[in-house]
Image (cartoon, rainbow over all chains, first blue to last red; front, top):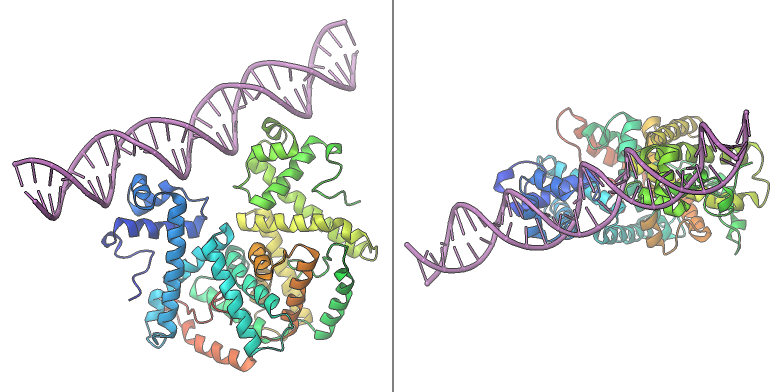
Length: 228
Length: 228
DNA sequence: GTTGGCACTATATGAGCGTATAGTGGGCAA
DNA sequence: TTGCCCACTATACGCTCATATAGTGCCAAC
């Protein structure tokens, strides 16, 4: 059993504690930690602010519970999908999809706001990617660790830029249509080389002098600069 | 003339207005908008909170001035580098590097905190990338807009994940050493195909059914999932 | 030398925050 | 019936924030 979507149904069937936790995850995901007040959470959960304190002690403690719960929940869903063979079950994926979207939004926020649990997840993902790349695509780089860190950083960063990417695309990337469009572009990205290897070799050589002990770094290949 | 680094020298030579603006850019970049108080800014600039109000009217107005200034400053520096031929001038790049790093940090924050100026910059970068890709690498995708949006989203998102990437790498990516390491991985990323095109074609086909009108999107290729 | 204006400071105000605590009501054991 | 526990509410405290306003001193114009 994976449990219902965090967002909606069976609202009054949940214990107040669970309602508070779910409301917190929703609001934290949408507005960030500092952008959410305990009063907001209490109102969203339909309880008094005092009850939140009664159950969780403090906002920070509630947040840690949310971190752990979101991480755990996402792992469980993925296990169900991969090991319980529920991918084959049509209707399972659509049923958990809203929850997955919410959890990704929450964890992305947690990454930006600085949560130790999310940071550990990030590190795990880097290590897993590192192993995957060195095993399945060993020729792409000589520095697996840096490659993996950049890969995971760009993936999670892309989600962090959700609003801007959606705006540029004209469609929310968390809708089916938007997600497919983004996934298609990502697939292109991973399966084609954007830059001429020769050009890259030259650029690398041009940067080489900076590796000398003293002077600060270059900006010519600075990420976030112009398109390429 | 590009002006001195925002961060440090000639502190007391600047007008109070400029000191306040520079202090705000520094603190906003480091702690975010909401994480910075007008008292912090005033103290950092060595003036009273009242003077900040006198010159800028409100925190939000100050922020807009900072947005415009940071954008303008970065454009000017890039123009100097590209069109004034100052790239050739050794010593120019190292002299402006700290400022560039600061401006990137600031604009990344502005993107995350939601500034209209930064959003416009993002859109411009997407459009520029779109044009560049369709002209110089037309074979990589059929959907230039989505490709460009993802490209820019990942680049800026990577900077947004600065702390986590640096931690995973064991070195701050805004130092020379860290930057070179990250740039190297990025170069690998852009010049080699990570995934087998055949595998991608299959994955794309597997996702195709979702394009049907109704059901929500899939998660099998969800970005931010495991390494690949 | 006086006046006017402006950069600047000190201090006040009111809202909103997290947190604290006293109180209430209903169900359950004895 | 009595007593007690516990989920839950109402209210208040202390703090910090952005913002507002009254006041000060310098400097240039006349």
